Image 1 (spheres, helix red, strand yellow):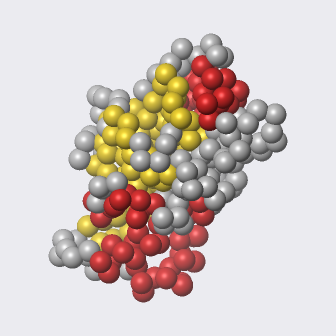
Image 2 (spheres, one colour):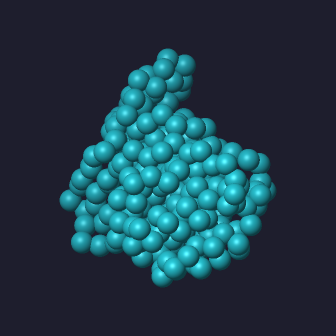
Image 3 (cartoon, one colour):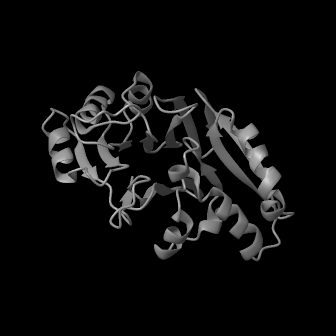
Length: 252
């Protein structure tokens, strides 16, 4: 497995950290995860071919996590030269099918193609499996029907991803024993954080889940990243702690 960090920031403008976006390769399968504004262009800049993505995985509908989904489909229809007929899966929280139908009323003719079918898989507390890998989801403490994901290669490593969430038992269970926990760490300790986490809260999730290592992401401009890493490391958590950076590649 390989994870590429397309963006490690938030909706807050920050030239050092773009809005969220991740590209995960699991064997021959490629997933575009939470494609925030500009994620597709950043993938190309990092030497990735976004057209190779087999699926898009969304944790929730906020624009900093989903704004490039439609440009991705628009580009795939109009800029890719291929005669192959494919399915493009969109893994998304429950209720997304209805939301997507509304988008199709406006943008459908621009993104519907004879060369692919858009197949929506709604995820809540469930699992989707293929022979080579699986995706497990769980509701998390954020807006609406937001979910976190656990991506596992058959017989191999696993990556848990929180999306946006406050501390909750669901993210602890989703991350339990995962090789890597990619987890939001939006605000410094002592800040009001409904639906988001601080370094001390991330430390609790890391210790309770027993994840092998932690990568903090979704970092607000006011976050002292070095201090955040120090707090998690000094909490008693024994795994490696890393702060995500745009363009980072992580082998799992």
